[in-house]
Length: 144
Image 1 (cartoon, rainbow, N blue to C red):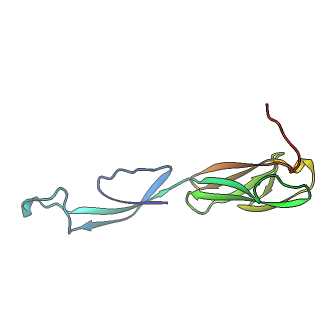
Image 2: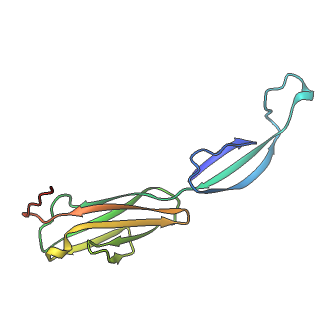
Image 3: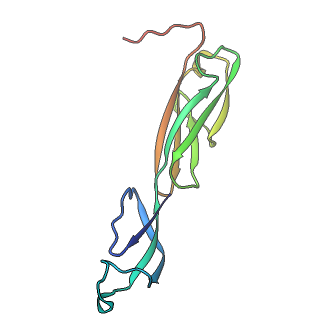
């Protein structure tokens, strides 16, 4: 969430979604531009603006590296930017939704458990996706 304070008229920077003015009050201690005479003094208005920001996420696996068959690994989907509340979901390599949480533990018991896991995070302003590739320890994959 970005909070900006501007003297009207204001310009919004980093506005990725929407905003709303929470407060508008007369600021009698300042003028714009600086006045040389009392007759040139103009009151300014102070505004607090809240910007809604869509999520930006990263995904990783713990422990890192290849996973031994029959063991567990933790997949973590972490929001690095964006307004709460964020809602998370994980999809397995087959595309099925397997969890509605940012952190999950997966048991890798068969070949079908390995591959790309994708996390999606959304809030009222948008969504982002991030993926982690899980490979089996002891198996070598060659990409052309």
